[in-house]
Image (tube, rainbow, N blue to C red; front, side, top):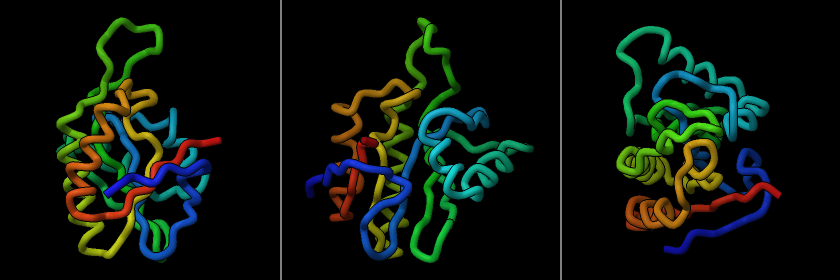
Length: 157
């Protein structure tokens, strides 16, 4: 399987049929920067689901995924793949956790397979999480590609 790269808004994909839009969230309940702003601008349910999960224990853990239906054919997947948050000026290591991305994408693959869905995403984990696409792309191939699930990666133009 090859990943299709597209220009545009991952929250407004051009694919037909059932779609899962995947993005990466942190494990401390902070929502408000990066791709989540585009998600929240289009739908309120993913943010509401995420925030309510952090209202009281047990809290979501690294590798967990919240599947949030937002339209008749679109589900947003809040993948917990980032440990904490960091300031752009921080010397701390990036909060991306590649094993959590792999674990979460395996869950996305099972969900997509069960629902006959394709997967859409921005370059997950490469923004505020500080990850590197050359490490994430092979994880996508191992998890989604191995299941022959179509994947479109959107770069916002």
